[in-house]
Each structure stands twice: as C-alpha cells, then as structure tokens.
Length: 384
Ligand SMILES: Nc1ncnc2c1ncn2[C@@H]1O[C@H](COP(=O)(O)OP(=O)(O)OP(=O)(O)O)[C@@H](O)[C@H]1O
Image (cartoon, helix red, strand yellow):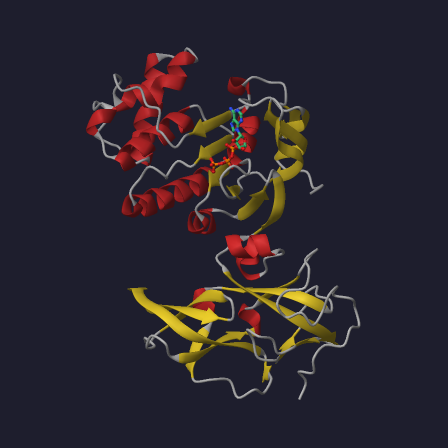
C-alpha cells in the first residue's frame, strides 16, 4: 500500500535474533481509523503492534506518525498508549491512582490529574469506584481502568493487544462495544490485535489479515467476508468447508466438471480471477443448504451440488449443524430442519456463497482428469 496514512508503516522488517517475523511490511492507517490485525497464532500481530509502540526494534523500514519519523523514538515519546490482555494494573493503587499514573509520571499538577481522572471515570462508567483497588473489581471493570490509564495521557494512537481475551463471553461483548463507541467518540486512531474474527468484524473499520509476517489481505469487514482473495483468507473468515473441483472458463461462466465429490455445474464467473484447471472451492456452513435425496446427474445452474451422507447432527442454536460425508471430505452444513443420520443428501451452495480459487502448485487431486491445469484443456463435459 503506497498511500500515506496518519500512521504510516513502510517496508517494516522485525524479528527476534535469527527469527524473522515481519518482512518489508507496508501499512497506512488513517486518522481516526480503527484497524484490526487478525491472523493465526505466531503470524506476527503482536510483533507489529510492539514495533509500532516502540518496544520491538525494527531491523529495517520506517514508522511515521502524522509525517514525523518515530522509528528511533522511545515508546513514551510516540504519543501512543498500549492496552494489554493482562490489565497490568498496580494492585496496591486505587482505580483513580491507576488511571492517573501516566500523568503523575509526567509530573502533571495534582488538580489536573484529579480532573482528568474524574472525566475518564465518567466516560468509562467507573464513577464511584475511584477509591477501590483492582482486586475489588470485575474483569470488565479492570479492563476499563486499563483503558482509562491508556487514555489519560491523550494518546494520538491507541494500541490494543487482545485486551478482551481475558473477559468472559458476555462481558466481552459489552466491553467490545464500549471500546468502539469510545474510540469513535474521541476520534482516536486505534490498532487492535486479535485472533477473534467476530471481534475484528464488529469493531474495525478495516481488517488486516496477516499470514506469516505478511499482509494476506486487507479491507472492510464486508470486503474480506464476501470477497476473500485467497483460500487462507476465506478459511480465516469462516469458509472452512473445502472441496477440490475442476473447471473451465466459458465467457462469463465457469463450467464445473462432475467429480467424485460434486455434480456438474454451470456458474456465473462474477469477476473471479479463475483459469481452466484445478480449483479449490470454499464455503461457510451457514451459506449452504441441505436437500434430501440423490443428485439426478444433471448440471445445476448458478449453484454447486455435492452429494453426500449425513454423519452427525447437532443443535448449537438457531439451526441444525450437520456433518456430511462428501467423497473424502467431511463438510459442515446448517439446516433449519434436522436430517436423519445416514440420509442421502445434496449440499447446495449458491454461486455467490461459493469462493473459488485456482489451486496453486498442486498435483492433480483424486479427480485425476487434469495433471497440470493447462489452459484450454478440455474437461469432462458438464454443459447440457
Ligand atoms: N521475545 C521473543 N523472542 C523470540 N521469538 C519471539 C519472541 N516473541 C515472539 N517470538 C516469535 O515471533 C513470532 C511472532 O510472534 P507474535 O507474538 O508477533 O505472534 P502473534 O501473531 O501475536 O501470535 P499470538 O496470536 O499467538 O499472540 C512467533 O513465531 C513467536 O514465537
């Protein structure tokens, strides 16, 4: 990304000794924007956040804030505040003393500190708790004190390192909302590390998905959810069902050949960057439907059908979730009605819910009809 941001990260490389974690990472974050860094464990989210904060020294690249190069500045000179997963509150200090701690360190007058602490207690719903010690607070209240302490110094940038992961599910939803509302109200720029997709979706203006120290894709929650650019991103955004197909492009259609795990289909290409050959399809359990009975062998139009057998059904709430055996795979599909174990079914996935990707660098799958995915190869006829 070449566009200049308020917080600008250009060509950032960082690691620990011989371990390279980030390699030439570029990221531009706008003023007042809330960006979530999402990725699997060990992909470098915390390292990036700590490099932004100044706690990890980059081996290359530049970090600037509002046009000022801060790459070599110490953490406390960067106008940033970091909130951790563990609240790291001083247990012997009261709520008010914890919130005012950064201001006291900066030698601010007592009256000014008291005023600012009072304002933050009001803002964070902590009024009346100023005299309590952290040990006498709930997890959610503690996290709000930690947030108050971070905000007390009026940071330009708020860095959040999984601040909600220690909270129980119900409180997490509330604090999640509190943080977003506050961030928007204060117009503060925020970078939030999480591996909780839903948390990133509901809190962030933009999600940046990291994969092994590189940006796999970035965009609004809707863009990533509806248009994942790679199988990795699709899986990360919840499309964990995977099936291998062979396809051929015909104008603005992609013709899917019948395979051991799928019926033939004729689908709208819909802008997907596909080529003839082996494809990887991904979809979400809730985006497909289950139909009773076996396939009639005809190609379906604008939907892919996968014949299978129900292996298990459970009710997690809202819909019945079925494990369906399809060829060599077990796929998860939701349905409003339960299907009997062993029932012959078809999983139907409408084109718009089907993420299709060219399979890269793989030998032919069990389909076996293509060995190298060469363009123009004639596939088994699936057109009717
Ligand atoms: N202090 C350290 N010394 C050596 N290696 C480290 C250190 N901290 C992190 N690493 C390694 O750097 C890589 C990236 O770690 P990082 O903490 O940035 O990942 P993460 O995406 O935040 O993961 P998680 O979601 O598990 O917190 C990992 O392989 C990790 O083992």
